[in-house]
Length: 294
Image (spheres, rainbow, N blue to C red):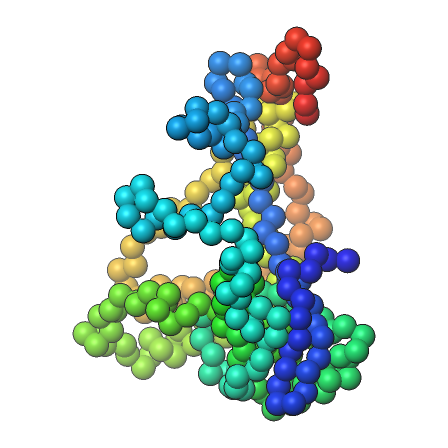
């Protein structure tokens, strides 16, 4: 079962249901460790007190707010718990808004909202009502020492919750000089045709992180002592004639499929074997009296 990040009650009107939240997404990235160039040992970043001139344990840490230079007011976890608002335990729906009116720019993190056994019927009632009406619920929620404004909306397998940025956190967009640019009707028509030629049902499984794939391939090549293959980069030329560029783009997309041979009939080019290279996998050297970690 996924780790619960918040547990409490979701309420609207006089209806209350126990729910729990867990993360709906997690970034998958390859991370690199920082090593000492001379011996390839992994560098560490200890919690160091410059006054006591020693490393400190996490149990010795307290929170402090710097109100003046090098002057702090201290807080314990117990004191911070005392000032938690009611939204730390109860997520009260403040209002319902049309989902189509919401700007995704305000969305921050996404979570799944799951009911406890005692709240299944009320949960289903709220989800179905929002689904059929096109509304989402605005509520407040306190977690990780911050009160969030959130939007709860029906999903395909349950309700989802998104924490939102406050309006003062949204940066103003730079002005775009659209008023001085004249767009011709024919240009708009061609642009719309190009959009339609590229239109497809949304399928997130089609998209992948090519940079991360290239990093994995580079790691595999280095482990085998092979040379890293450089990725070809496209040459981006400035558009001189917008109409001509639109026409060429449409012509490429509308070219009949028969003009190209089926993929099964085209022989795949035989790639050259990457040249051997004197690169060995990096390992952490063993130290006397200690077991080397992998």
